[in-house]
Structures are given as structure tokens and as C-alpha cells.
Image 1 (cartoon, rainbow, N blue to C red):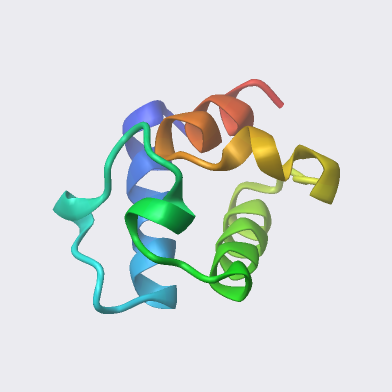
Image 2: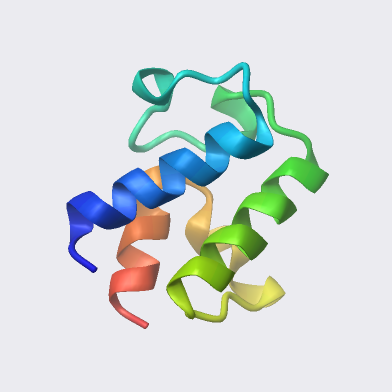
Length: 79
């Protein structure tokens, strides 16, 4: 999966979890939780969904490494 496809997958999953969010409103380098007002359950749902779709395990200890769109893309590309 290339970076563009991965970005689209993450944004799609994010919009499935929080339908009020528009894909073009998601900042590349701001914490999802703060920028989009996601609560901890929404963030957890996003991490689980992306992990399942990409087959890349994201352990809880690594959650701080996937707080932004760019961070999540980099993490998945490198694991």
C-alpha cells in the first residue's frame, strides 16, 4: 500500500468513526484528539480499525507515535 492509499484508508476510517469530520479538514501534523476533538474511545477505534485494515499491529505503548495523520502513515509504512 502506498502512502496515498494509506492516507485515504486512515481518513476513511476516521470519517466512519466520526462522520461529522470532513476528510479535507484533517490536519497532517496535529494531534487527532485535539484538532478534531476525538475522545479516547474514538481514537482507540481509529487505531484498531487502521491496524486491522493494514495488518500492522499498533500496541498501546506506541499510541504516542500515531497521534497525527503523518505519524500514523510513517508508523505503518515502517512496520
